[in-house]
Length: 220
Image (cartoon, rainbow, N blue to C red; front, top):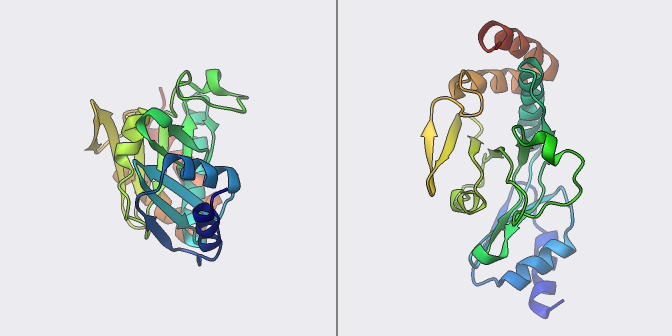
């Protein structure tokens, strides 16, 4: 571990909750060193884009909102008879693009059967997640969409604490769409209402209400 990496690690470990540290001129080797030193640490999210490194620490509100999407997607895929493999904040990286990051949550849906039970993922041979969820309540510093585009993630849902947006990868960049490409009858505005309900009233009432909505609108 280099002196610079050691100093950076000390700085990261003292970051308060709900804060962001943005660094420039960080080498790929230093980024990989930090990943090795902070394996599966739930306190941090690291994003690297060609020399720029962002380190985020999380708040209880961030984690509460993030968890709601897992419950909603579980209801949705169950009712639509689809499989779902969630990999949480697994680190995805491509050395040739000098880009990598840890999403707030990610899911395999169309590729769920192929990826179920996998302990390691290599994007050189494995598909990217079908869906990524980003909860950006107070961390907009680094634009993650170019990183996701390099990883070829088909769809990103972004929640900023108040509104929800769906983005689909078209060519080399993301385009905002009112409905999900993975679930065409699901609009961002509709799902945002259930997220708000879960945030205010709890998970179980939200899941029950969403299940009723799916059965009324999305059954195949």
